Image (cartoon, rainbow, N blue to C red; front, side, top):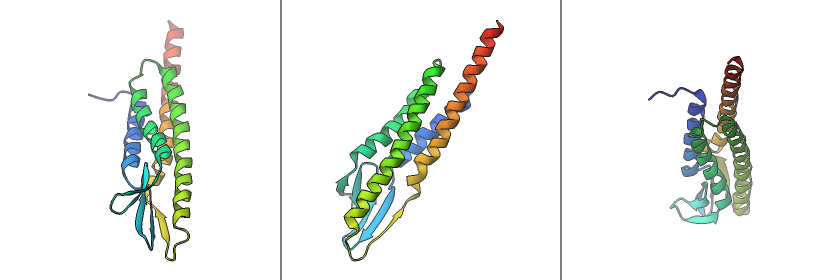
Length: 155
């Protein structure tokens, strides 16, 4: 099987990167109480016990993971694909904002501890990378639509 449309590759990359974002830690916090990790669905201890839920962020990131996969299979409906790419971009922006909000909320939990450090993991930036690929996919789908319209006009 060969991928003939570059936007399919872009959308697969978005799906894969967002799947990684769902399962790896996005940030870490350390203090007197131990080390904690911010994941897509909760703030967890080193043992994996949930301390603070982050369900809304998890749902937004999960939707941002599933939508590009659905969009790939709508290849005959290019205008709908473009609209879904725009929705994906909005979801990714929402995911970035939610990551910031939950990072701040998690930071506030630990800010009063005597010894407190925190940091980001590389996965927190993946939705920003996905924004680029979602934009490239939308642009490639639009180019295909223009090509089809030009071919129809010639007939």
